[in-house]
Length: 384
Image 1 (cartoon, rainbow, N blue to C red):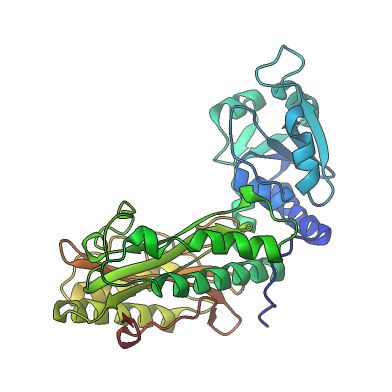
Image 2 (tube, rainbow, N blue to C red):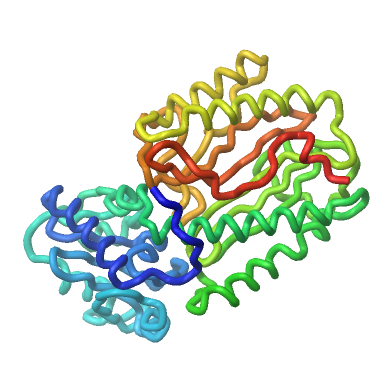
């Protein structure tokens, strides 16, 4: 696999048609007459339209020959501006609306009269009720999304580049006494600058990303982002992280780092985390099993006397910032070329700190390629 060039450009009609084809193949193999998608991420993947879910539903119906998007009349110009590929729009009046003008009336007129209808697990109960007893849950689009196309890899590589440069910018502002809010203040403007200058069709709805510096008192609680007014003080471990979705595709980069010096009690857990990280990379290749990688990382933590890590070794990215497949106990998935993973085994010691690096990694035919290239040895992560 040759690494495609970075791109922020939107998906092509040919690429969109290929995605529809893959969904239809799985739909037909399951014996379904149609497939109904409601999840906004899957709708973005199949239409290039990004929006949030509210009381006005957006429902995509794929049959063997057609793709019909049921949308509120209010949103027609919005959808027309961003949609890519062959897509029939079926508008409904409003929500709520009188009988005959509701979204459910449009759905009833579009669904095939006979046959099983596949739906996503994310479809709400009211949508399942509208389809009736012939619906069957089958997460086809989620399965198709697991292996990325060359276009998607290029988009994720572009997001990775934006995030890696933002991390360097953010860590460069860390100084004793500087508040977290000051250190991260340039990150969001940088995201907007890259999108507006490199992605002419950029849709603000398709981005949700952030950068954060976690001071040592917060790093043992990896998802505690409430430290914006905390000052940076010498020592560590600090956590610098950039994560989310930019211009439609997710990635992340995280580094444990230190300010001025490395405390003695931080060296052993950092080194253990790095042993877990190197083990994960040593096993990461086509044919490997995701759960076995996580098990190997957890075994290292246990041998070193640390409790079970708080989270899995990795997850995938795509049109979201967290999705299947996973590097985790309980999922015996076979790793394949074209998959994307985070590699982020971590150690968390209550009251002392957390230790984790994370990178966005592409699986190639022979191994992997790291898309978020940044120093990871502790000697190179002392901010002065």
